[in-house]
Image (cartoon, rainbow, N blue to C red; front, side, top):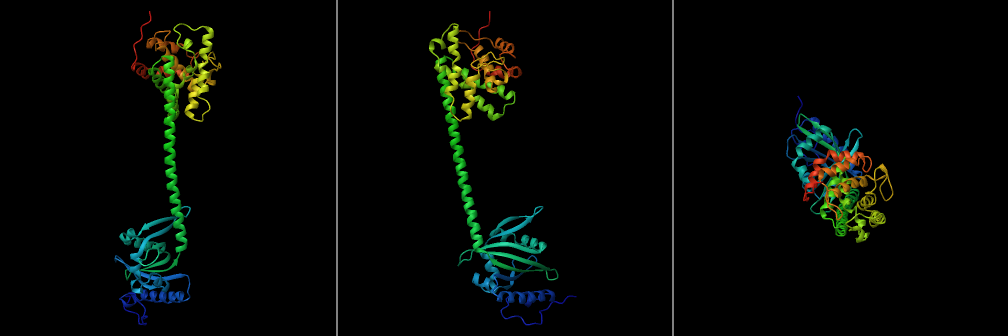
Length: 411
């Protein structure tokens, strides 16, 4: 049976621990004496490290120090009997460093002082299992500046005593940690400014986008006044085109551009004389040649800006009268030489023009206009777009029927 009694050797007069005076095993007491002797000689050499020995009982509320280096006592301005209490009361946080497998990259975990006090038992259990302590403590003494101490210790457990012994060294790293903390604060400040700038940029970008949409809306309305058409045509064109775009798999963000750019398809009609634009009868060949110029006029009005929205609107204005078979204008493009946005707008523009009244004609019935679109498959229109149009007739008819004046039937 292991004996429990104080060692026969004299207890040092400046010893303020418990183990050498208590009913502990000789093995534990001898380990404490050996550690104190070793650490006293280390402390007397004036080494930069601060040796200490602390201990705690299983399930006890607090630890105590068996030995504290003189530098630590001077730093904390306390006695050996009160060093543990002083450390506990002044601790702000503890940074624990872990080597995370499989790369063994070091990660940092910061525990606030209150968390340490509330979960000391869990922390001690982990330390006992690991057998080591590797941490940096930030202390805020009541009568001095903040201190950072790096702690490296070996923890030994004596099961017969129910006691853990921590033999370690502390190293003052205030300068390094102050620099690291200042760097972290600077980084945090930069991140905050970056977030503010990103938010401001997003706000300005959104304002610019709204301004572009407003300009497009006003230009489209100006076209309506010249062409004697209504906002109904502009609105339906946007919805027809977006329906076809979605059906053929255009990405949502690009389909939104198509929706907002489509109203600009006839903006070039602003530059066409009223005598031609509003003529109730059929245009002569020279008049039709002048009418065709609204495509290039519109493209010129919308050119010269980096905005993606205005670029798409320019393509649409320039190419929405091109034909799949190459018989359109102004450039006689054919098939996939015509931008997709222009091909979609060409189909939807013809359909809406057929089903809408004009100075020179009455509106066609829905079914008759659908038949005309089908007849244009592969000649006037992209065959794939005609197929999508037909497959989405319920949606097309719903858009057509909104605020639409019924067309007269053909005789």
